[in-house]
Image 1 (tube, rainbow, N blue to C red):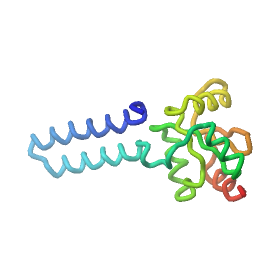
Image 2: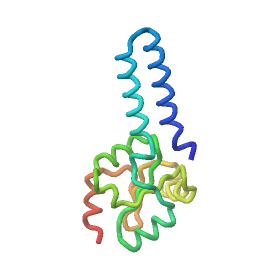
Image 3: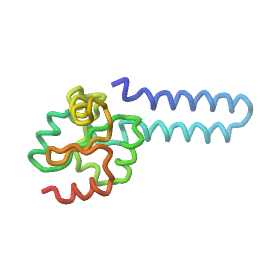
Image 4: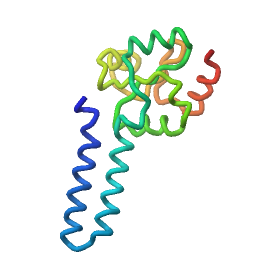
Length: 145
């Protein structure tokens, strides 16, 4: 759990330090702007922007029932964020597994990627696809029952 919040926490703390320095130099406008930028970056890199993660075993079970893809991701991954943002509201229809929270998910990703934890890894119909194009993922979602 702490691993998923480490980067956002460091961004907020770093932004606060920079903002404090700017306030002490009598630049409150710049301080507010820096703090807002760091808070937005922290939010974007936090688990809050992704749909609620479930365990790999549960995601595989649900995918077998409804045919929807399973997305293995981790906080701080820019490619995962790109996928999430480009999917828009349809992202909530996928099954998301945070590999930092779920050891079985991390193991599934390693087995699909020659021992590497390369994310996002999207599993469609039992076949893994590493860092696929978001348009392709959206297409797979539209063909799911």
